[in-house]
Amino acid sequence: MKKKLEFTYYPNPILRQKCAPIVDFNDEIKSIAAEMIEKMHEHKGIGLAGPQVGLNQRIIVIEPTPGEPKVLLNPEITASSKDWQIGEEGCLSFPRIYGLVPRAKSITVRYQDLDGKKHKLKANKLLAVVLAHEIDHLNQILFIDRFIKVNQGEEDLKKLLKESKEKINLYE
Image (cartoon, rainbow, N blue to C red; front, side, top):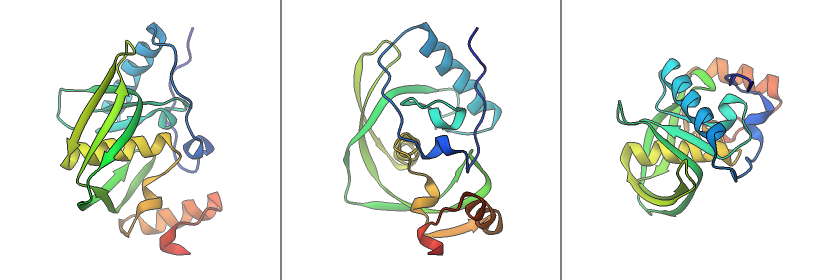
């Protein structure tokens, strides 16, 4: 019996590991994806990456439009616009912490679906932000690494950073 996915919070070390590609497009990965969508809904998120549920695998689930969840396996940003947007982001692995993050206004993502079929997706605005945030997780980059300003939860963040012995640009 497969183990239930457990939500991970910073400073869990899995959040700083580069994720392995998915090579088996089988029932197990479909089951994991369904459970991840459930967890994302449970935590009222619009995106969730493998490391956030203890998986060192290149899988993300997103739902920027309610009722339209999407699973992307082995996603990779292949192009980014030169235009940037700055918006407030939060992260399910950092409860109560929000900050301003610069992101490309539009990106192109190459990924595979649950059957291993290859796709390309052009995204802008909120979808681009969600995809970039979740793909960052797969590459051991956290949204706090990109912060230009903490809007909420600064004391919580400082406490977590002290506990993790990590430094981010804002506090170096």
